[in-house]
Amino acid sequence: MRRTAGLHRVQEEMDALSEVLRLARFSASVALDATAHAPWSVAVPASTTMARAHVVLDGRARLTLSGGESIDIESGDLIFLPHGDAHAIGSDAEAQSVALASVARPAVASELVPVSIGRGGAAVRWISLTASCERHLAEPLMAALPRAIRVPMEGSPALNALISSLGLTLTASDAPAVGAGLRRDILATLVLVEALKRHVTALAPRAKGWLEALNDRYVGRALALVHGRPGEPWTVEKLGRQVGLSRSALAERFSDVMGEPIFAFLTRWRLLLAAEMLLTTPQSIEAIAKEAGYESASAFAGAFKRQFRKPPSVWRRGRRRRA
Image (cartoon, rainbow, N blue to C red):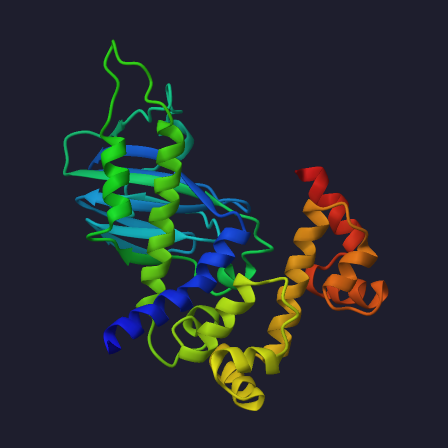
């Protein structure tokens, strides 16, 4: 019974991560399915809109970040670069690099064409993933992640399914598989979500931050409630009743685990949701300010500018123009 209750608590706490990813419209796709032979290296440019991940399926590789930091990747490892940092992946740091754009091939009839890089040396099978999201809504997660995380993915059902989908190739008489491209994208997304969850559960206890808080019995529940029911007019007292702590006890524990007061977190999350409403609804700034809990549009505009460095009206026009 105790083990079942513990599993339920972990699933509940993970909901905060799932809700942030859902609200931020997190999605992924497979950009490259490659077999490389040493010596080899592929240079990946920096991106402000796209995250990258690589999964080594067989063999080993080394990823080198701009600045020189290197990370060894073994078979079964996934490495995720959430901030889109420039990097190179290859057999070693000294191998001459080719640009990712020169080796990647577009899908043909929803089928991703495998590519071969290099010749003669030890072989490595790896896949490269891209991921995107509404970064302003994913801010609690993205701000908590380092430049790169390495996650062992042995036994991952999502990764096994993705590998199987990549193994399906067309013959001359085959028709394109219906929905193959969409299925591959869904599986790629599930692989990255599972990697993030594995990363969270492996974090050292008593560390501080949003990711670490997901493992805390009370703060994790509070985060799950806030992210899962964003329209609720949450107060510290109301959250305390829901998670089983007094107002003062929750406030103290939240500050200790998260490293910031709970009121500051609630204010920032409401502003992030207000930013989404500015982008996706025709509501006036005054109406959005009220829903975000501000008594006046001017007070809302001031808080919004401190968070996003632009007034709401300017942010709305700029984001819609890019969209």
